[in-house]
Structures are given as structure tokens and as C-alpha cells.
Image (cartoon, rainbow, N blue to C red; front, side):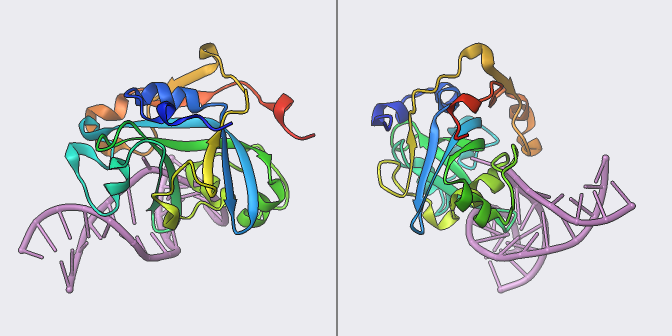
Length: 199
DNA sequence: CGGCCGATCCACT
DNA sequence: GTGGATCGGCCGA
């Protein structure tokens, strides 16, 4: 089942980042259904976070989506070729977001392989935000989509990741963020999810 | 306008 | 470990 709106509108983006581990990111794009279990996330804590696109209240056509109410998709183009997918959190006008950095394939594996041009499923197929979006069909033109629609959404499959199985570390690729580059806002689930995966 | 650069990835050394 | 690909968005003039 999908988490309800109150899951996304909470004030604690770090806590939401941790709770997204083990949840399923699902898409229905170009007539293809895919599902993946989220295993790595990063929190971006709004206007006081130097690593965030919304730092210091920067509000542009691109970042406007971050100011939407929690429960929307913020997807932007990075390095001219990669779409990076984020879950918008907090209430309207508080631009918090969680970058989804890694997942493992749960269903629609053939579609993911086709989209990425790979021949065989490997553990790293969905590890890395650019690869993940490509495999799931998440193009940046889908930015602003509601996670309560039928294109992209989060599902709780009853998979739990306990706190002792969550590793926290500094975020990746944000050296420009000065002191905020050191914040431990990256979360990785270290358990394996084989028992939930198709055989 | 023009120039710079990025919440990345992969091939190559 | 390193550098090139590739282009929309952002900022300064």
C-alpha cells in the first residue's frame, strides 16, 4: 500500500530518508511496470542546507517543484544526461527532498535491462541515481508528478530495515557545500533483500 | 546573451 | 585514479 500524505509532510527529512529504505519505488511508464526496493537515500534539508538546490530560498522554474507539498517527484537533469529522482517532503513552501540513490530490482527486471542496455541482472543495476532513473524510465520531464498518481509512486511492501542495519555517511558529489558537505545525510541499508526478490 | 558547471557514469590507464 | 561526454539551468553583464 502507498504511504499516506502524512508520511511525506513531516518536518524531519532525515527520518523520512531512513524510512524510505526498504520501501518500493514503482513506475508505470510507456506501458511498462517496474518496482524496486530502495536501498540508498540522501536528505536535502531545504533553505539552510548548502548542498540543496533550494539553499537560501533559491526559487526558480526548476526548483519550484521542491516547494510543492510533500508527496511529489522532483526530477532534474544532471551533467546533461542523467535524470535524478527525488521525493519532495514537508509542507508546501518548505523545500525538503530525498534523493533516491540506489535500489534493487523487485519486478519488471526485463524492462529495466532493456532501458539500460544491459544483458543480465547484476547487483549494481540500480545503484547510482542516474542508472536508477534510466532503468525505471524516470525522465526529468516527469518532474512535478504526484506520488499519488499512476505514473510514479512509493509503496510499503511490509519490508522493514531496522536502525542497526542503516549506515549513515556524508553525501556524494557535493563538495561545494562547505561545512554542510560533512553532514551524515546519506543512508544505506546494509541488509540483503533476497528473501523478498523473485527467484 | 554568453559562459560556466553540475546531487553522474563509464571507459581507460 | 582520471578525464570526457553532454546540455539545461543559472547567474552576471
